[in-house]
Length: 290
Image (cartoon, rainbow, N blue to C red; front, side):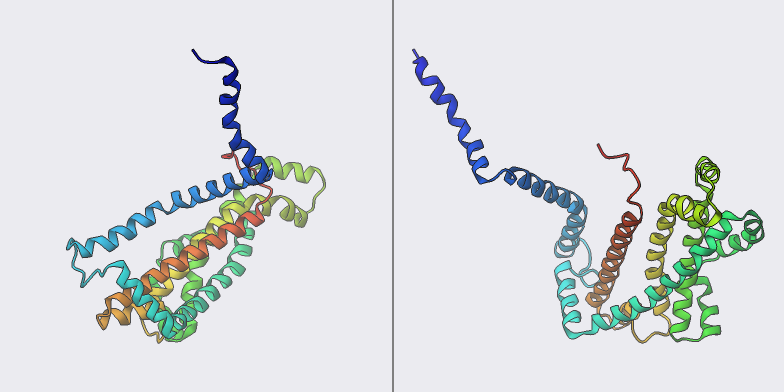
């Protein structure tokens, strides 16, 4: 038979853990929960990449693929570190980023204003639509020989090619963003007496920002991909040149090092553009939250 007087003592024992948490501070539990949440989210997003890395490391070592043509990931990372330590990787990355950012920046400065005008003024849209369709269906790399013949093998042709490749997605998404603005918002703004400049500033641009940034993010990816292909023809530096040179000299690990670097740069550029989009879209409400 159990003594009833002992029950409060036994039941009170588990309260020692909450007391310890309370003694650690009122925000300790919340901080630990936030850290666990951030760690769990980061792990969840990294599962696919970790799985790819494990397959890449294990498949050559198990003989599933020829390690001469696909070295283990650890060997590629060692080669990447050697390129970084020798300064070669920094030189090639600097050359590629200079060309890519120059072309992307020029595309943003020219395509967004032009897209706003085309999207807003219907006569201009009707005039330029056939020309836009021609450029839209002409691949940038198909024009590489044209750029080389006209502008030469120097930096100008490569930057011009990136400018052309980046202008199409930015221009088309800007036009779509302007045309997609709710007509009720425009009529309401006009009824309040806003002129054209204020209407663009307060209504058109904020509503079109998400679509415009979608085009900028696509252009950011194109700026790297097109440039790498252009650097394989007549370049003395750049990631495309590094990959092509490593392939011809059968330095397979160096070739994969260049490919990994391109992927990393593309990921970083995309995340920066996403953060910039959030900065300019703070007024939006996330309907998926909650």
